[in-house]
Length: 309
Image (tube, rainbow, N blue to C red; front, side, top):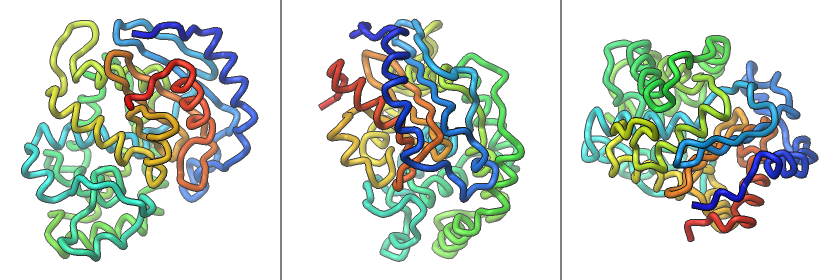
């Protein structure tokens, strides 16, 4: 395991990428996210042996947004099994935007993968629970287990803001309900999904989730199995092929680390034998990925030869 990266190096490199903070813009299509400060930058590495190093505004919290898709997929697979989940959601990457409805019109009219919005909505629909709050409560309990932190919850203002403005996601759900991909109430599934996306944490907590995935789903301290190893592998594989929206291919070439981004400006990376890396920088590029996050992960990967390829 390469542990040459120090806090001083992280601080230096964070300063180097800081000028890129204004090369994009925050996610202003979600009203509650439009107020994020592009200069709130942070990074944390949680090594597989439990050591953590961090730099920047590490106390700044952000919402998971699409990073939650990795966690909800793991829980849905544990609830239902692979056959059930992948009978309703595919495994293939797409070059289309994450919110596209186009591919749903192609037979067999199921989402191509769990990392685009349609697939993630279908996955949330599969999580066991009689109400949206029960589903979200189970997701939070799952995250509490992964982070060993009971304080993590969701931002109600962000959840409400996303729920009220989620017209396209409603369209995706209604289309999938027409084709029996999802069941039950569209509004209740959307309620659970927007609360899931609004789960709030910081880079240190997020990096620990990445380290647990890198450890094959086992808790780093107790060794307790939280996610079955083969399901952790499935989640990391989707992070490689689909995790960075329709920039996943170029990210694999430039960085080569399993990663998932969210439109809050956060990025989760997980590397077997190394640990978890979390980066936060709210300014997004045209694909919806953190500008600073991409630059910093590219620097780290190239300097320390972290690519899995």
